[in-house]
Image 1: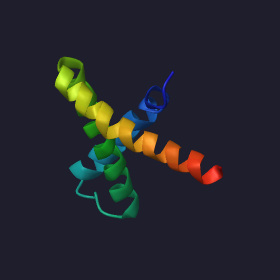
Image 2 (image 1 turned 120 degrees about the horizontal axis):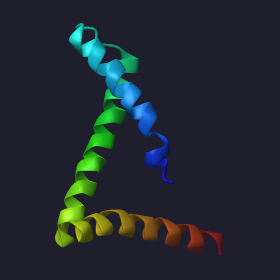
Image 3 (image 1 turned 180 degrees about the vertical axis):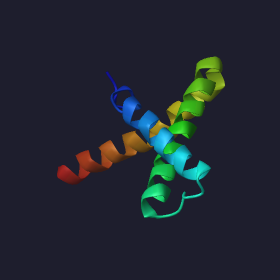
Image 4 (image 1 turned 135 degrees about the horizontal axis):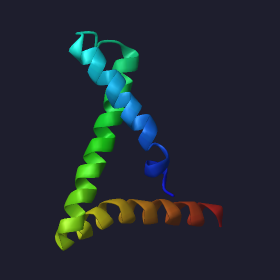
Length: 82
């Protein structure tokens, strides 16, 4: 099970809470901004995953965007420890 699956229930509750605040005109404050940023990131990631499922080019682009930085970090950690 992935982190995304484990936090899905929390995400749905956050959407309910945030949208209720927006409906009542109360969507201001540090907590609301933090929740909005987290929900926005999750939604963007879901859209990218959805696009990658339908397109080999999008999947390749996602792999390069996430894989290359991860490999660079691993190399930096490995070389600095030697």
